[in-house]
Image: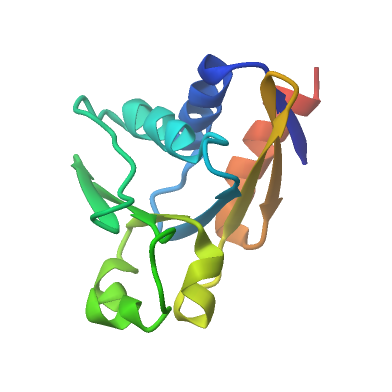
Length: 156
């Protein structure tokens, strides 16, 4: 599915719409795109929609930021500075994945085979002054999100 986003507000809205349709199950989302393409902005929109009221920053230096929102846990990873996928063992990646956690991975290619398979891949690309987003649902868990976004953005 291809979605056109005209500005930052549209990227935040997409994150909010993903949160609205996220089933309360463990899910892994890969966020792909160039520097500044909107990966953290999309994550901010998602977290706000789930009820987070604090700051949302890119975990470029910390590698992972944890957000507990009610009974839900969201882990936001930024693997940009990862020099070797094996480093994920040192941070205890297996402890983050599972339960009903949502794991968002920016720069997933840096994690190689150490990362769990994604349920949803979101690719953000620059297009003129906005962004173009490609969504690919790879599991049954991602279907509610995919169908909700398809109805909202494609079925107009």
